[in-house]
Length: 349
Image (cartoon, rainbow, N blue to C red):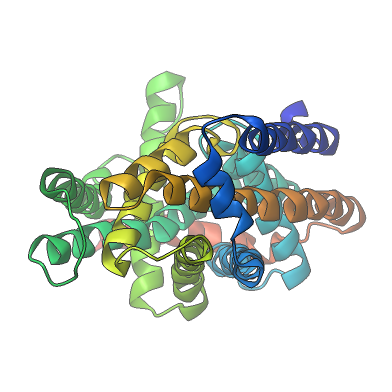
């Protein structure tokens, strides 16, 4: 296991994550010119702040539900919870733009007895499945806002551009299995080209797996992916309500979706990137600067804190599970051959 994914390293990262949060709190309390922001925090509704905590917990647990159903419904809930939560902690604590969680999952599932091919395919499927609600929200909500179905201030150019980008991304993702399925599966060894071909095949198979999950009505995976986003959006909405009047719901949700793109910047927990993206998007869609900052800081404290703390604890339990259990994921090993078998059957036909 890489040292970056060790329990000691994650605990150190957890402590380091608390430092900027405490620093921001100290600056808000002490700097002149922030009286409006301090007033927002002093008047915040404590019950709504508690609701953010509960909603973020529901979002994290929804992610675990989707994770288990995508990778292997036969895995125990304990192992699934520990691995799913540990992945979310790594994504918060290690600045790899989300790749750290996937690396941890691949390592743990491989140690647990799952085949490399199945891990690769289902990692792609899980990423695509949990991304679909975000792209769907941007692609559907944008045009609805532009034609005035929902009230609120809507920057036309930005809204149109993000909606078109979401539609183009969805079209490309849908076409990839057809394009990558033409690659010769027998030529995946030897040199860089062979590795790239193998990676492309796994990506195509993973996206195709996502389609099968949707077509066959795997409700736990689907509801888990939807709940992961829906509860997170609800937490953002409640954060706004805790500090004043809420923006029109359609505009607020769209601003949330595009603001989260700042998290693609490889910073620990997206600190700075996500915060700036959300605050900027909220202001563009009609929020006051003080409320946008207050709501974002409160939301982000729970968005980072809940998975970081619970996930680090889960990671320690995960190491214990892998050390004490004999290959807890071997029950899924037989699934790895599904796409290859189907491909062979199509070729034979």
